[in-house]
Amino acid sequence: MGLVTSPPAAAQAHGATVTQMRLEQADDGVYLSAAVDFELPQLVEDVLDKGIAIYFVAEAELYRERWYWTDRKLAQAARHMRLAYQPLTRRWRLNVAPVPITGNTGFGVSLNQNFDSLGEALDAVKRIGRLRLGDVAEIGDDASHGVVFRFRLDTSQLPRPFQIGVVGQADWDIAVERSARLPVERLR
Image (cartoon, rainbow, N blue to C red):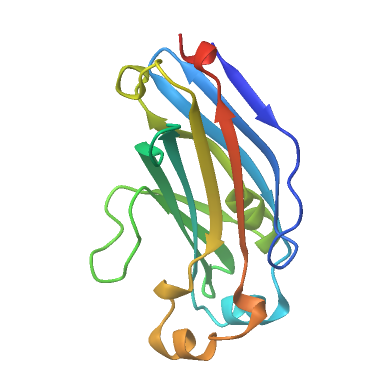
């Protein structure tokens, strides 16, 4: 079982940081686990308190590094998270799915969790556990591989009036990116 960890990254937008990132090879594939740290701005909390859902996206891309050409993307995975306050039950609901969560198409296959406080719900959003990047056979072991992990608040899924209002507002800019390398010997 191969394992690669990387040190904490420098602060990005709104103080968001990747505090932990781990690449792991198991018999059935390569996985990424990460921990992101950020503070939710008061403006975003106010929107949540009014019952409007916000969306986060965690995505990772695995590249085969090539010296003679641009890197080749071998695999990509994403985790979409919808966080909403339920005023009737006074609980926070987190929906997690591998595809964008939209109101028109339903939630499809997703994990749904309820929390008593916003802090508990945000702790679940900040932990990305075992995001499957692909099979070891598909990835191959003949070159070194780079992994790029991105986490962001997805304002494109907000209701239209909010999408127009968030343009240029730093409070809505929660994003972080981290790169790591998966050595060849780890995949063998």
